[in-house]
Image (cartoon, rainbow, N blue to C red; front, top):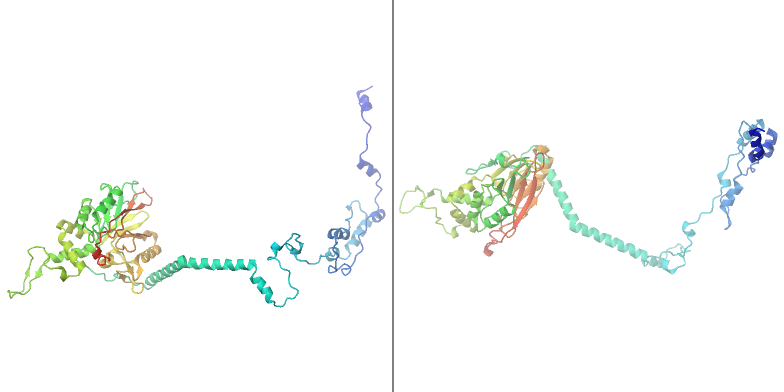
Length: 509
């Protein structure tokens, strides 16, 4: 016996597969028997028989209707197994009328979706204000209007709009009006600048600037003192606002900023003297640290008075018949207070208290101090009051530079009060339209009414020290090569040095 015979004895009998059994009974497919066994589709019915607008009972089942109306799909018969009879049958089915979705899928009657909600929103009294059945009569009914006005939803809507209107009014009252005024002011500034640029007209003092003798108009700061992108922290400029004779506060401020005369340089924005108790001593502090300064309106007045005190006088006719010039024997003022306004007489007293060295230092202060280029600030200049935009430093009006606070947009003339537009706004607007390499920043004092004012191209540092405010300093520090200079503002508190009887007389800057 061979091994194959042994394996065949123990192997199970062969079992035929069900699919194989089914294939054994398949008869040969002919066009005749295929057409006989193929399920026939339902007969065609016109659309009028099953109209979608007919009434349906409440227990109408949409699923059953769709299952009954859709005929079963015929079995997939390939063209390889089908004969000519199948091809004729398929062509006959293709010529049947088109399938009608309206006939086989009738629509359900239209009903509001809210009617399908089955919770207690209709029956619970808690929801009575939210749902009221529509009245049968649609005519105007005053009782229905009363119900609407007294409903909870209507009260909530009215309350919401009252709160909304109140918030809008408050926003306009506290912020909207100021924003609108700022917008109108910005439009006026832009129009003023555009008119000047379009017509080519110069600004005040551009064509024929006035000339004043006995003063330095423009002076350049030593470039070695300017932070120009060197080693970080190696140089600092300390620019201080109006001191007005507050010597103790000036020393306190220099101590607070750790002022070092070897690496730092002090610049005073004018009005070092007058109003305060220690004007000569404040000048001595500035001289001791080799500080730079600009000429303010109070220095200008005191220097003019000092010049008048030491000038030649015309002798009054007396027992001599001739009128002649003579030099006074002493600088003592022989005139009393009744001959001058109160402010001018105080200037004459202050001029007499200053030494010649102090007078020489104040006389050396220029009207405009050009600091030079500083990274992030452009060309920096220091003045006492302000500058006219569009006018070069050489053609600026000295009197306006020492006294201006605003500019009349109609005449383009600087004003010594706040009657016009603030000159700083016009200056910053003008700088913003210039090429970046031509922009400049101005540091100033004088305007204690406005106080500390730090804009992009203007820095106001007069914070009313003599009136009991603060003495402020702007520190410009070197931040390294190719980096913007660091700026910081430091303050110290000041005493109020105004005599009570002189408050009205000293109210002006």
